[in-house]
Amino acid sequence: MPRKHPRLELDAAIHPPIRFSLVAVLSTEGECAFQQICHRLAVNAATLSKNVAYLETAGYVEVRKGFVGKRPRTWLSLTPAGLEAFNRHTAALRAISRVGNTS
Image (cartoon, rainbow, N blue to C red; front, side):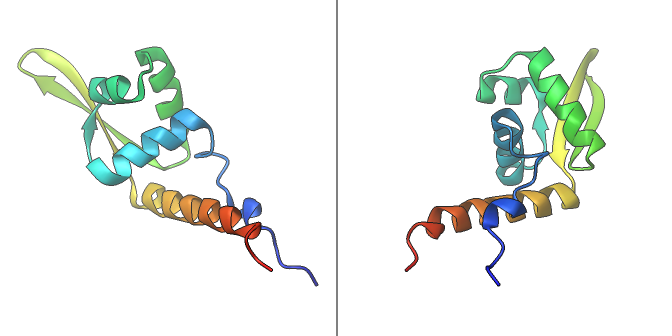
């Protein structure tokens, strides 16, 4: 029986480029300010907000709201489930890249 192809291990919630980029930043940086992530990913606030909402619903991202002085701020971080999903997803990508190199 043939082995299961690693593409089947990809996480559809993380796979789109903006979501993947967001989760990658959070996996290395920990908690980040929303505006900082907009700048790093070169996306506008509406685009990031839509993708954050999707990942929050999936249980992968936590949103924390607060104030700096009198100005409202939003911070994002990965949940443990989000970090685990990111690690599985990147492992699947590495496995896919090796598929063509096996004999």
